[in-house]
Length: 308
Image (tube, rainbow, N blue to C red):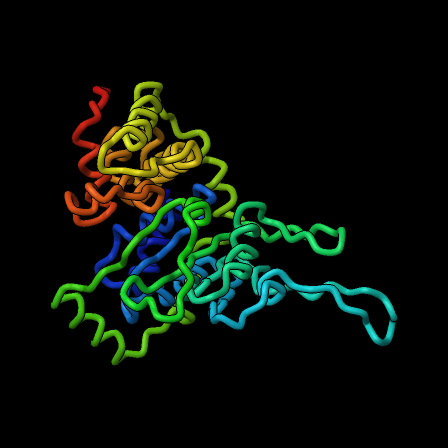
């Protein structure tokens, strides 16, 4: 637990005033999931990923998802060595611990599919050979919700592969003044000291599996997902993959909070982050609520909370 606190505190040296967001990202990492960060430019998306990688000395990879990026840039490719005349595999950018896919919605659907296949399988298969990715492996993809020119919409089936979708948001006035001071002191993510190792992260991820989640809470998760499938506001409800994602995230989030058991409040807190990108609103829903997150909060009001 102390290592998790040290990791969060270390990242917070770069990402000011967003401890809840850092906790969510660390929880997603321990749950073995990937994160979609949907936010405007300049709020610290890249800094967050770089700080996380530096804090555990994990290998940090970055893909600028431009329209001309090829699937082989992501996965790697086989080529003939002109000296030995043998086939060699050249690894792509995905062979790292923390991969930042910057502006994922600017790349072509073919490249998006190559990346998301890697996310699901955690391996690359080329020319009949399979190459395992290092552990831990986590993709943090970003997209700008405002600018749509020159972008490709992520299909719902691909959005479903992300365990959570978050938004960092603007800092408060006090936090932004702190950011200016830190910028003056030139504090960079690469300067952060290592507070945890990649081996520790793998070990802690295994411990997350032992976090207790009672039957009433498991039923609560399923009741929420069923409610999304039957609500008038929602055209496409949460799939069983969403239920599994919530189950894993709830365990990891409880672990990050220092508990070995899940509370109903954990599920309520996580629901907008885990479920909002997995639903589609009806025309009635679009006029009744401001966004998908609010739709999920309306669903939560309808579902009875278990008493532990």
